[in-house]
Image 1 (cartoon, rainbow, N blue to C red):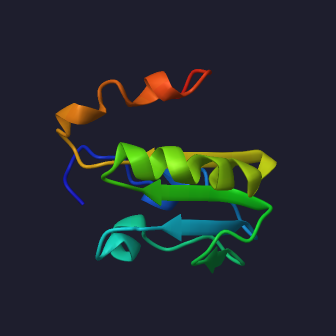
Image 2 (cartoon, rainbow, N blue to C red):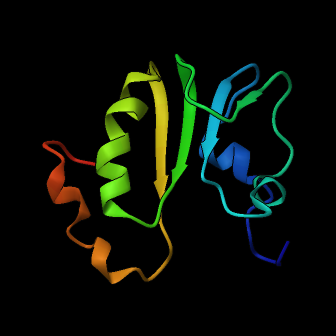
Length: 105
């Protein structure tokens, strides 16, 4: 870890809690190393089998996100968190959120 960076693991920064059921979908190679040690009792699922407290969905395609979003939403617990990641610098994503009738952050 570089000097000046937070000492918190990525899992902690993302808000993954002990005992959570989570799904990591389309994650890049070595993402497990980047994510770091998960809290005790976290169950990592490779598919959407909700309700899930945390879903991290990686995509390079707006169409894939549009097609998958209803399933992501359906399998997320009421107080769950959904993270959507795409490659840094992908210019075609600027208007991506126009397809959703609500604010995404």
